[in-house]
Image (cartoon, rainbow, N blue to C red):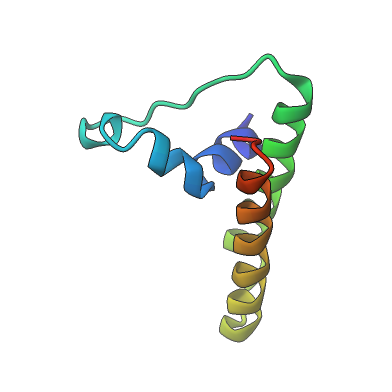
Length: 81
């Protein structure tokens, strides 16, 4: 569940889609019944969690962040969000 939440809230489309709702305090995370979408969010979330808990070298983190952003944009372009 944590990986799903991390994947959803870290995705650029989350902030774009819920911009107005995010002005009100409190995090709201949409749940999906779509198994493919759930698994993709969990995959992205695991990467986000890994980046924040494992990668300590700044240059390695920057490279990993850039790769993750490209993957997120690719997912958004494919209509996953």
